[in-house]
Length: 115
Image (cartoon, rainbow, N blue to C red; front, top):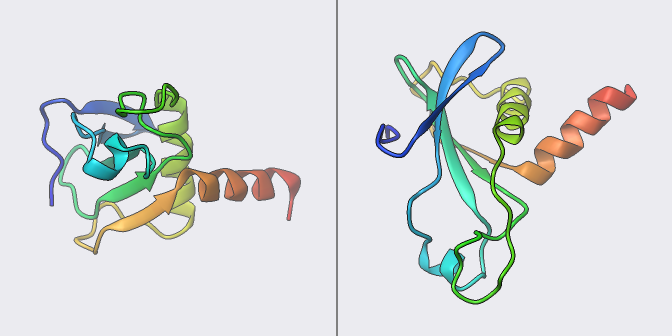
């Protein structure tokens, strides 16, 4: 599974370039504000495994609730680093790895506190 280049953005994390993308239209559940915003990440060159990230926010373009926040590149970079620490191998043709932003934040706070 490869991420389409159209509509994707490049991000460099620790000297490696990744491509990330939020689907252009919400899924039915996202549109109804039942499920959170998700995005996908893969290596820019020779992609293998895809990382699918579930955020802790609704899509800003959902159909009912006027809330939600944009995904910032710094958040994407932090999540990529957390996924790599949890064993994501973006250069290998492994199954898709799923991760939540909440889990990535908990992992980052545990590492900075020394536990």
